[in-house]
Structure formats: C-alpha cells, structure tokens
Length: 324
Figure 1 (tube, one colour):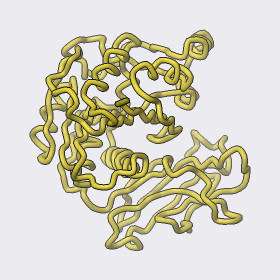
Figure 2 (cartoon, rainbow, N blue to C red; figure 1 turned 90 degrees about the horizontal axis):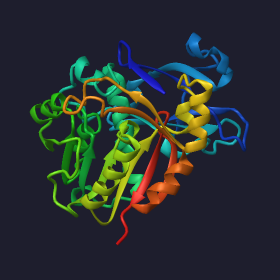
Figure 3 (cartoon, rainbow, N blue to C red; figure 1 turned 180 degrees about the vertical axis):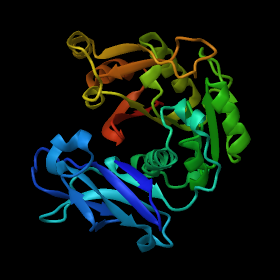
Figure 4 (tube, rainbow, N blue to C red; figure 1 turned 90 degrees about the vertical axis):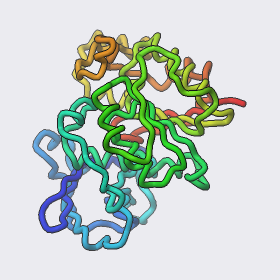
C-alpha cells in the first residue's frame, strides 16, 4: 500500500488488495473499521494495470478522523463484512506523534526510502501492530531494542507509543549519529559489524529488526541470531523480517538464481552498495530466505512462534521467543 499527502487534508492512497484464496470474492478497503467510499478498484498505476480489480486507488478525507491517533487500513469482504485480509497485514497512517524531525532524503536513501510519507507510513504500520502480536499489557515495562535502527523509521514511533526504554543500534555511523542528535527519548549506539555488541546479556524484553536479516550473509545471520539470543531476557521475543517467496516475485531473478533459491532456501544476490557498511565494505548484502529454511535453521537458536506473511509490505515477519 502507498499513501501520499495531497492538498487540503487529503490522503491519496493506492495498493493491491488480494482476498484469501479460499474466498475469491470482492473485498473492500476499510479505515478504522469503516468501508471507504471514493475508492476505485482496477485502476492503480499503469505498471500494475494487469492486476485488474485487486488494485485500488482513491482519496481519504482526513477531516473525518479528527481527534483520532491514526487511521488503520484493513479490508472486509463486500458480501458479508467479514475480515478479508489478516490484521497483521493492516497499514497505519499516524495522525499524532509525528512531531520528531524527519531525516533528509540522503539519510532515508541509506535504508531504501526517500519519500517522507512512505517513511512515516511504513514505520508506523510496523510498530502499531506489535501490541497485538505480543499482547503487551503495559509498554512502560518493556525494554525494546531496535536492531538496525537506521535513521529511526521505527524508533520514532516506539517513542511516541511510550515504550519504557528504547535502545537503537546500527552499523551505519551516518544514521546512528543522526538518531542520537534528533530523536530524544531513546539511546542510540554505533556498533561493529562483528559480535558481540556492548549491550549486557539478558537486558532486553523485545527485539525488532526491520530488513536486517535481508542484508546478512548466511554465516553472519547465525552469529547475529546467537547475539540476539544473548541480549534477550528468558522468555523474551523478537520480531524480525525476511524477504521470502513473496518478495522474490518482485525481484528480477534469472532462472538459475531462482531455482537455486528454491533448492537451498537461502540466496545471496550480492553486495548492496548503500554506504551503510563503511566499517566493512561488502558486509551489506541482499538476501532472500524461504520460510522452510527459517523453520529448519533458526529453531536451533529460538522457538519460531509464527511467520506473518506481508507484515511489512512484501516482507514476512518472523516471531521468535527465547527459551527459558
């Protein structure tokens, strides 16, 4: 889903709404539980015209949501009003808690995002759903580690949600310094590409990592799984994202690379030269996993509690728990 602020408190949205395969019926977009009008299906942008009626675009009048913290976008079946897509695939547009400075385009480019609206939309959507995934009764009692915090796409929303303690770490000195200077309410540190980090063992309740395992070699992923396990308290959780089969559908693989990915479950496409690995050039890769691979190999480090397809755009979330 994509959203852009237009003039006069209008939000222009577009996206793809595919109902579950077991109910091939029309679905309608909702905002805070209400079916939206002024939405057209089957238009979208020319690049996706082939998708037909599963694509949508339209305008949302933000004045309808005055006084609310944000807009939660979901979907229902048009016939009976039952939920069509799972809640973990919802998107969230924040209407409050966005007063912190927004990084410059060059900072956002280092995490693969250059648009202010997308930066806020994607980060808020990730953080908004954490309470539901983990059933957090009181955020003030939770110490969250934003692993690979970049320029604070997630951290800024953790701060606005009132988590008790927030720590952000990253290997990129440019963005780690930006966060430290611009996002009061959290502690930020530059860390090495190598483990261990300086953080104490068993000090963290929850680890979140958006698109970090998507950039680690196979050997490095196991080292960092071990490190995350060390940092978490017994019974603590992690939610991290990976690029899986759904992500591979939008990657221009050649046949040999795709077949190798399906055979091995892990594919390193090569170095992603975004500048974030200045400490160790070549460290920052572009990586794909299959869910079967994650289940087979990561269970040596954690209990793999769930895989949530489409939790963060095209990336799957993997929910992990440290055993007692």
